[in-house]
Structure formats: C-alpha cells, structure tokens
Amino acid sequence: MKLVFATHNKNKFKEIESLLPNYIQLLSLDDIGCTEDIEETGTTIDENAIIKAKYVKLNYDYDCFADDTGLEVDELGGEPGVYSARYAGEEKDSDANMNKLLKNLEGKENRRARFKTVIALTLNGKETLFTGICEGNIIEKKKGDEGFGYDPIFQPDGYEQTFAQMSLSEKSTISHRARAFTQLTDYLSE
Picture 1 (cartoon, one colour):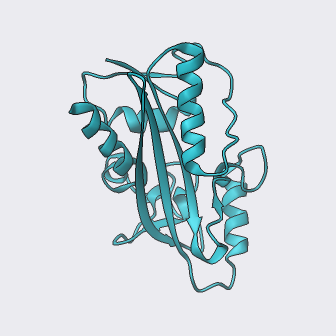
Picture 2 (cartoon, helix red, strand yellow):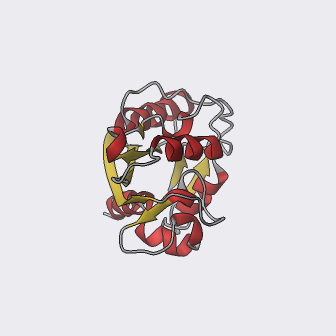
Picture 3 (cartoon, one colour):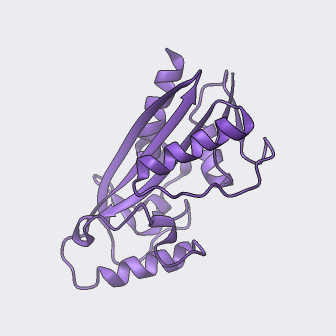
C-alpha cells in the first residue's frame, strides 16, 4: 500500500517511517513532487491536519495522512498551541520559539504542558482523525541534542530526561506522535 505522509520534514518522516508496518510504502511530499508549503490556515491543530491531508488527495490523488502538533502550556492558556512552529515568528526558528516560551514562563511555578498530535487520514474516500497526547513539564534550561522543535525543554511525566536527551527509539515509544501513530497503524492493520 502506498501512502503519503504530508511532510517535508526529514526528521519527522524518519521517526514515523520507523513506526509503520513494512507493507506500507511511505512517501513524503518530496517523493510525489509536491514542493509547495501547504498553508496551515486552521485555527486548531485538528483543522491544520485535515487541510494538509485533503490538499494532497485533491491535488495529487494519493491517499494521505497529515499531522499537526502543538505544545500546549497551561500557564499560558494553551499557548503556543496551533502556532507552535511560528511562536516567535514566521521563520519557524526552534531556538527562537524555545527562548520566547522560556521567557514567557520566567518566574512561573506552573510549568505543566502537553504535546498534542492530531493525524488526519484520507483513505478510500473516508476521513479519520487520531489524537496522541504526552503530558509533562517545561524545564528551565535546554537539555539534550536529539530530536527537534521544543524537545530540549520538554520533560515527559515519569522521566528525568527531556525528549532531546532520549534516543529516537526511546522517544518513539512514549511521544504524542507515537501514540497518535499507534492508533493510525492499528487502524491501517484492521
């Protein structure tokens, strides 16, 4: 089965490819010749995932799944949320995003946060959503060199390390993305 994962992000693609069963040939947007950035105009994480999956189906006629992920921080009323990638500006700079978040949390005791991933799947004319959540805390200083995005400042519940201090295989067993993709792979296996 050929299935497009609507991403240009090679790190994210690699992480997801390692989670899927062998009978699924995973293609990226680059693999199908989609070089444009699909505009994420939704006001929720769910809407952005749906927009991307529908775009690929309509314009390239491939069954597709797309994800959108946001970091929701309780003390900041759910920010950065749907704007996680662009929190510090349109250039989508991870360091700038983390620095802004850490500055906004200075002096705050409540550092509870969660990563939320929503996957929208368009398959055989049907649309299905899968949601994965990983609860944790925002630490005060960046730690670790692995992963991407907010991984160096997010410490999942029950762990002493941040996502950026974990190996890809360890992170893949507990992350929000892994939880959503487990639901997706279970669905595709039915």
